[in-house]
Length: 231
Image 1 (spheres, rainbow, N blue to C red):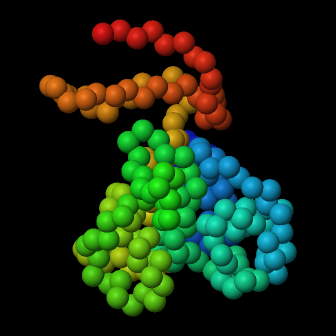
Image 2: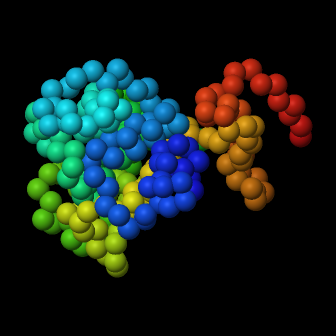
């Protein structure tokens, strides 16, 4: 429901989502670019990024694939191949979401940390390296383990059964929706209309903050909405 509300998915038909279907990489590119907009990321031009195996796809799909390469969300299978028809693995999903969060705008309550090498610039991530998964030892890419741990600590990544993450298993559409909805919680994505959120709803003496947003039907910010405040 969340990713349909934000226009990230249209469903497999008007009335079906097909939650157990795998997610091909061409479809994932569309989901990621559609998620980037409400998450506060700026979509680049979509100019050709040198992938030689996407020419058979629609212009919309090719643009999305090129855009996620420009954003640094995907580097492709090789320098010149994207493998659009391969299914997204759970390891790849963690990398995609972690990289997208780093170029998104942090929202109220979102967790952010300093960008490596900077003293002021921050990005959405967790620096905690702990996790409860017992099957990550076979992963050869250190960035993947960091991404999975970061997303687990952010409350974004969930396992499959017990303490298993199953990094090489194909990502299904149900889990894809879960990861994306959880990730949106850290971004500046907010629903259409006027919304007031409190940092706490039961408090005695703690510091209390409010976040107020006003968004158009396409979730773009409305500037200058007057708000009456009261004690």
